[in-house]
Amino acid sequence: MAAFPFEIKAVEGKARTGVLKTPRGDIRTPAFMPVGTAATVKAMTVDQVKATGADIILGNTYHLMLRPSAERVARLGGLHKFMRWDKPILTDSGGFQVMSLSGISKLTEEAVTFSSHVDGSKHVLTPERSIEIQADLLGSDIVMQLDECVAWPAEEARARKGMELSARWARRSKDAFGTRDTQALFGIQQGSTFEALRRESSDRLREIGFDGYAIGGLAVGEGHEAMCEVLDYAPGLLPEDRPRYLMGVGKPIDLVEAVARGVDMFDCVLPTRSGRHGQAWTWDGPINLKNAKYAEDESPLDPDSDCPASRDYSKAYLRHLFKAEEILGQVLLSWHNIAFFQALTAAMRAAIAEGRFERFRREFRARHLSQ
Ligand code: PRF
Image (cartoon, rainbow, N blue to C red; front, side, top):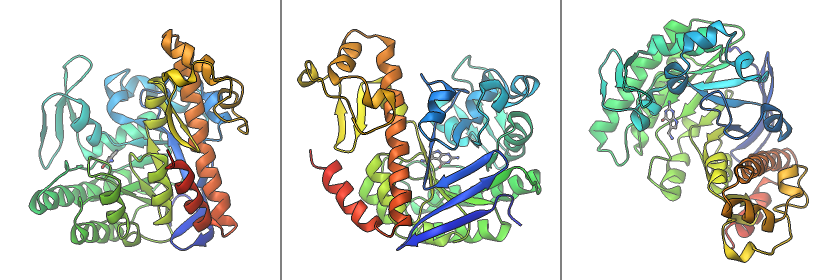
């Protein structure tokens, strides 16, 4: 029996909408998880994040084990209490962040060894230690297995090696996690752009049995079209009755096309990171508030939004904040972008529930890609 019930409410083509029920609250799918890497969704209070409609946020093993350390978070009552977020938290396992952020790292059958990007100190992460940090010390609701995300492009032999190591680490992760009632464990499908490898990866994960299944190893440079080609088959290789999570994705158009192909959950730094750099995501596509054309534009980013950042401030004011390097600009655009990503997933949920997702997708593409 899986830890958290997943109730699929409506299906249209491959798109699904449903609810993943957890002891800390319901996660409505399709769901977008704001990234709270270092126990904060950057530049936002948890009350702001909650008001955008987010049901769940993501935290990172890699960052928290280095600073302030998993043991310290545990002594302070766990990650939820520490950061004052009482809804579900999904934590990533660390392997992907080691590869993208740390100094020289060494990967063996047993573990990944790396030096901290904070102070250069040496650390070791095994599948078992990642489970201990996430489940026992941080107190995560959804725990991810440790995996290896192979860089793109990859030769098939190299992609196979990473997929097979990830499958063996999936087994070790499951053994370390055991079975729990109040926490879930997700496996991660790997295999780069090779269908046979994705199929074998999925078969091995299904054999072990997880509460949910992630699609890893995408959005690593292959581009939207190549990612969509993998998503034409990858979600369908995973169990239909469990949530499917596309890791580290993506742009609004990526979310819409992935939902059309059967994905239920997403996370990405894009709304907060691009917001800190002056980029706002809107129904009409992305805009850069630093552009001179907004200097005297009194319209808000979205008059119909119930997010104050989207509705109450003029583009002229937001542009001024970025030109003057005022930190409120970063706060307001992070807030607006997170609210937009939540509005987008809410719109997809409603469209699927009402059987008009294909029309929504067509109209979204036409409007969002128009400029
Ligand atoms: N594995 C893990 N985390 C991830 C990825 C992955 O493949 C990706 C790939 N886009 C983002 N985050 N564990």
